[in-house]
Image (tube, rainbow, N blue to C red; front, side, top):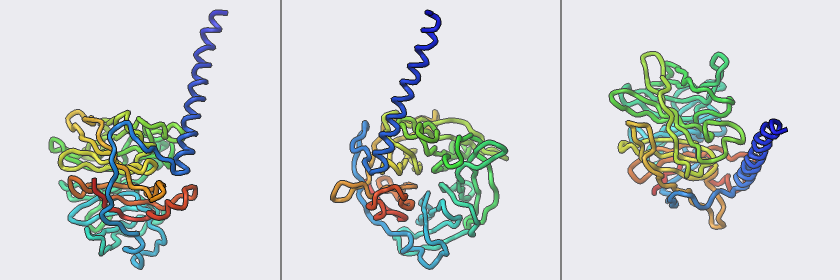
Length: 325
């Protein structure tokens, strides 16, 4: 009898914990769906100021056959913004004043990108595809391109994901000890998929080192447990080794220093929330990329409004935004 009790009790406890976990996830999903994002964070927070913004169709209008520009990543390089999209393979180059735009690269059916970064040592752009089948494993893939966005090589990032619609949502490149590294941001908490990915406090960045023929997975960076982001949608690092990480579902940007020697975030950082409308509704619902412009200014881009999102989310969709702290 005593043996049976010992065996049964932990199972019941696990079931109880699973029930509680499912309840929390369900509640988070409901709050997210109806725009009820967290108002306060366990770490310091402030509200961003919008400096300039434009709809992408205003800039790209007659330059593309694509009706939609579902932006997913952005960088600031050579006084221009470069934007990638998850619904087509072209890359937009937009001047810093948001006046002129051009589409680069070629249209390839079925290809879209989740992030973009620049390797200034080799003068190459890196474009990342979300997880794809790699001999039975689900891995992200790096596309290496020149300044005309002609693709030159493709390389796998060998970190396994659970689902092909969940993977890395942004990348940034840096140089350490004369070696080139890519920091790849997981979309879900703990790099997970499904309900578990929305339990905040487990943000992860995977670090890959450039080798002669491959990118080697070398480290995992943990974001602070106090960071209450439901998902992660964009990443950049500036020359002072300060990270900027965007969240679509939490409508915010997280800023914190990074210790490159130990691959650790050095403090709890600060969360900068996007402004809401006059009625307190979230309107920046689909932030999908972030890049530093200066020490106190970012560029971000927005994806298309989802069918389940409230109507006010349409106000800022498929746009480019320049914001300041």
